[in-house]
Image: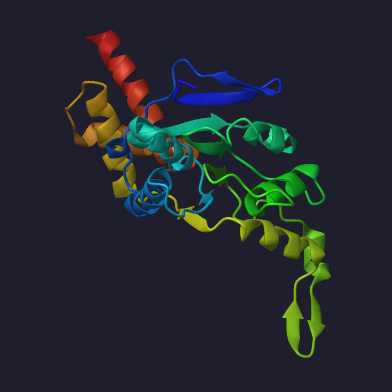
Length: 253
């Protein structure tokens, strides 16, 4: 397996010819999250104990980019990335089987993941994270991203499942199922919305990467209006604004 990245498609591993290279230095405003995932991945590639990781929080704040950055950072040390779509989680045993005997270290990357209560994928993921009758492979970790900390969508009726027992409040089966799945990830990394300053720092970085170093009060106002129109300040929105502004500026010059 000479490629750095693969995707699981049509029940087979397909090499990715042009993996998305994301340098860590290009991810701003998430230093705490970077440090946590880098440390865990460093342990993994060094063949020391490491944990499956769950990255949760606000959209566009760098969860997926941070996972891809691990490949850029550790690919030359034997790390490989395998992208697995959430609806293919029932194939996990087949995905893992050919990787177990490989010398490389594999991260199974599951992006934007949530499941419904009782979903077959829930059982498959629980088994992969904790192991069933078969011991989990030592050279495979799962890094999943989600906008929901507990992965399973919140439902109104779940509140009615809580019960009192000897003056203690206990969650119902649905909530217990959520917590049970989340707790199988040893590392939780949470992402919060960008502050205005963090958003503007990201805009400036993306503009510099596109060859534009100028900055002005008017440009700052345009960047803030762009974020306001999207009701979001994030690295993704900053990159989109930078591309829009740089593209228009290049056309006008």
